[in-house]
Amino acid sequence: MKLLPNTTCKTPNDFMSLAEEWLQAKSHRIKESTLIKYENLTNTHIKSFFDGVALSDVSTALINKKMIEMYENGLSDFSYSTFKSIFYLVKAITTYGVTMGYCQHVYFSFEIADRTQQKEVQVLSPFQEQEIIKAALSVECSNHLGILLSLCTGLRLGEVCALSVSNIDFEARTIEVQKTVQRLSNQNSDRSRLVITEPKSRHSVREIPIPAFLYEVLVSYNIDQYEKEKFVLTNTECPYEPRTLQYAFQRIVEKCGFTDLHFHCLRHTFATKCIRSGFDIKMVSEILGHASVSFTMNKYVHPSMDAKQEKMSILNQSWEAMRS
Image 1 (cartoon, helix red, strand yellow):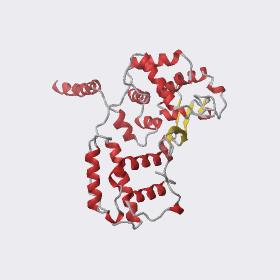
Image 2 (spheres, one colour):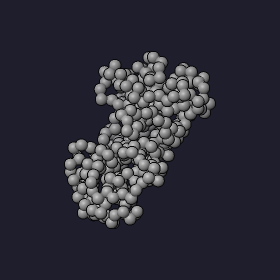
Image 3 (tube, one colour):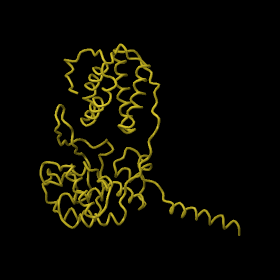
Image 4 (tube, one colour):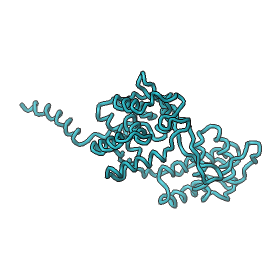
């Protein structure tokens, strides 16, 4: 969807024109990646149901009817989280139209049934972790360094690729996360471009201690000798390509004889090891750059049955003592 300058925007008379104006109004206040996501959802899903709907016809009954149709017809095509994003967009666009006086007030009586199930976090087993570390240490190259950076600090893929030498304090032995890199699609083009942006959220801007193991690896790569403005994985002024790092990880996984492992499992493995090692949950949340401690707990704090039985045995000792 091509965004027009404010000076050329006309009063919308249908829902999709309203959506275009709303996107234009939001474009200056949200990240480019978020704007592109909204545009894609609008063109791919919302347009199919709202194209040709006049603003004079917008009502509570019509909006909720369209949402029910979209929900029932779309469940097999997209995930629950995608539908939540679509619902947010329809509601935001409609609310904007009401606020601007383009259409009558709409009451959203439609409610999304919670069909989500917490996906099990993908974590490397100790054996898998050991084999991947051995493979990453076998040859010095950018891909292997990127894998070790994520596994030993919990950095996200884009954060690893956007890490610059100036972000590493070799004296204090810390890494400062200030940016990320991602591929964004170009409007009216099939080609995408690599873009350096702010991290996922304001909580993602953080400082992480470097473990001694990783510090020695960084020194062995002579990263401390690179110019400050260079990126760690390229030693140039251009960031690393995330897809290249993902492909390299998959090659290592296949070489080790493992299946169904994705790059993000390195971050999950780091977080899980922190929890099992007795890290304070607040500390883990800050290192990972999560928005809240509750998110970290819900995602990673899942006591095993062995741990539960161990604690139950402690209670049992007190009951046994009462019998004597």
